[in-house]
Length: 164
Image (tube, rainbow, N blue to C red; front, side, top):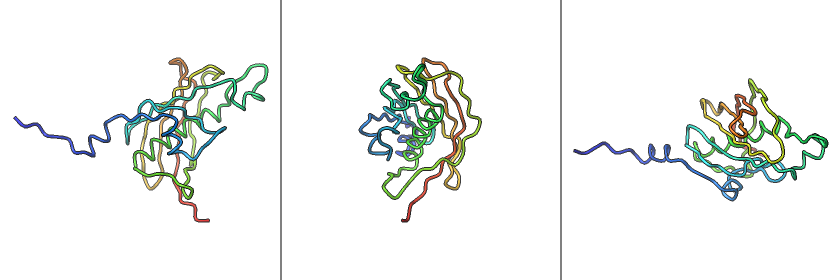
């Protein structure tokens, strides 16, 4: 009996992708000190991404936040989630960002912070694509440390061309 075969598009969408830092640097315009994704451990186009941010005491924000008890700022946890969401979006639509393209936050809803993120933590970034319509992408995002929820939010972003 012949079983139906998947089209190459279906196969590509369901095969998980991984990325090391070199692949991430090819896709995101961010650089030190604002690049906040170190590795992608799973990306399924059109569905979800799971990425890692290794939090080191050497991060520049720890100098002032807070010297007596270093904590990663919540806005940077959200930024790490947004960078993971950007990787998911650009891989899903199959584009490469260049010097004339940018991805902007369009909204952040329901942001909640459940535990501090400290030096030595490994931040696991889990982002699921909710919908993509008219150039606006909506994501459900969670950041975990040691399996515990550190932060969660609904993120919206949009991609634009810069004509300068």
